[in-house]
Length: 181
Image 1 (tube, rainbow, N blue to C red):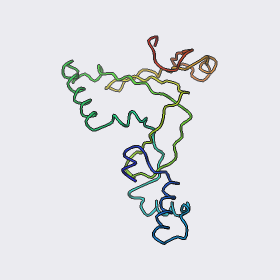
Image 2: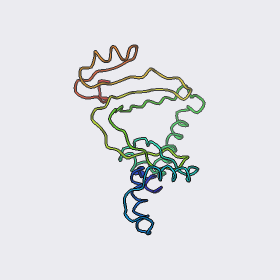
Image 3: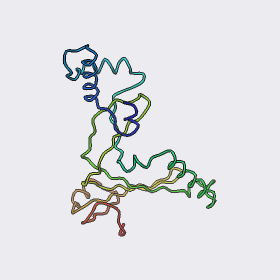
Image 4: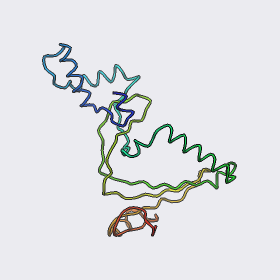
């Protein structure tokens, strides 16, 4: 169960109840293999509360899950350290900026899954098409720029009344960063 979680495929509450029901039946503790009740689940989580909890996972796309290996992360930080040294930025956090974009999708709601108490679980998901792009930029000293939103289609009315005093761009063809942004 924990191996599946670390690979991004956590066991949901209902799946755990089904597996436990199957196990109880195969051990002769139950006459049928129906899933165990919510009362059993809450008791199980209470007994094992110091080690596991039922948590809402954050989404992790399958391509990111495949490339998030210790080797690739070590390589990234080695290259970052080398670049900071080469450019003479080690004593200047105000000159080190990070810009990132993320897609905001209101559609994805993964179920709670069983996970160790001290870990934040992730669920592998597929990308959705109804995405609004948010661009954020800050530096290592803690300074930041206001968020920048990219909306698809003709949504000027919504944007003017909902996102007052924010920067935004409406792209009629797509909701992603392109050469015009």
